Length: 379
Image 1 (cartoon, helix red, strand yellow):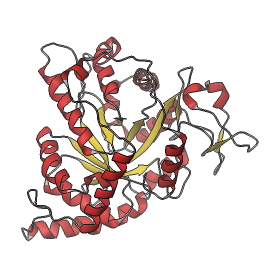
Image 2 (image 1 turned 135 degrees about the horizontal axis):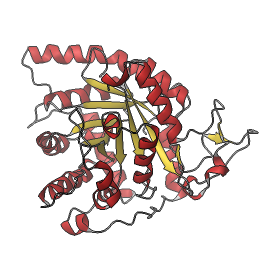
Image 3 (image 1 turned 135 degrees about the vertical axis):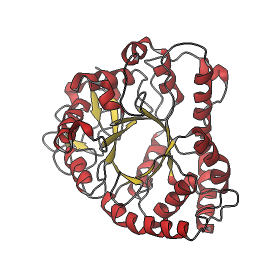
């Protein structure tokens, strides 16, 4: 955890506000701020090499060795085609997942050793990847350091689609690898986080947990252990009164992204504190700024708690009009793009996953709009 605070500060793609995203240099600078976690993104190439990139396409971040623009679709490319690409801003080579793991292992061992597990990596496993990327990830982790339990508290799997956790529960590979693995800490497996732009969708994943618990078998069971939501979907009365009590009942961790302002941080911290969430954290482009804000925020919350003032009334939350109106507009945006959450049904929970299935990428106009929002700091 960060010093002077119970709220975790998680660097978005490392230290996105000041350093090239998803690079070792950015990850190091993130940790130097006092943040103990960073979020990063993983893709698999056509020949099963795992690489670190937020975008499915290389043109925004990477150029070739001569500085020329590139246009590779990562899942449709062989690693040899992209291995020599450099970041446009800093000239750093595209990072492989194994390269990241080796650096992280060395970093942890030189900053406290095996006895401390405060440093963590939060993986955003992009939705357009095939489910079998999870097998590649686990195999890479074991290959770098063959002690699966050591990694449980240090790597988090962030998923956007139900097929990924269903694949974990269906494929024999994971039964063989995880059966019999014991951890000295609270972890039975890696944290598995549902990432979403709508809290309603996360309700299905909590229902899936109940479905898995109801199965009468001796198989190893993988369940969602945390939820990560875009900040604006939390700006509603229903989120506080309907979603948060269930999250608390299920004893799940909670994260929010991308939190870059004091107002966002204060609101999220009050919500998490009010419901005494077991662990909560914010994913931010500016971990240095959030670290500075946190001490004052936590001090103010502690002061209000001592005065028996309710931080957030769970039954009648008084949200700022700006928050509620922003959430209203965001809900309209979700309707406009046709966003639909996962079907919550036993039939869906039981259906067999195709390990090689690739999701269809959004249309170009949406990707351009997404890039604009990303530039504005929304994502």
